Length: 82
Image (cartoon, rainbow, N blue to C red; front, side):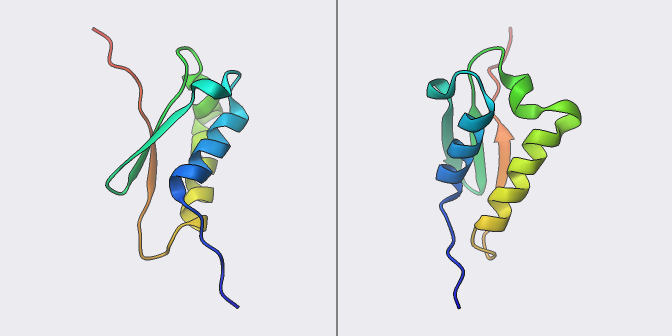
C-alpha cells in the first residue's frame, strides 16, 4: 500500500490557520525547501507556542506528510523591525 503525500504548503496553511485568531491573514510561501509562514501582527506567539512547541509540532507533521526525499523546513516569516 502506498502512502499519500500532501503538499507541504497546503498542510502548513491548514495547520497555521488552525492555531491563530485571524486565519484569513495567514500567508504561506515556499522558498526552496523552506515553507515560510506569515501571520497577522501580534499572532506570532500563537504560532510559536510555549517554548516553541506549536511550531515544532507543525514542522513534525509537515515533514511526516512530505516526500521523504524532500527535506522540508517550516519557518516563521516575521516582518523586520527598523
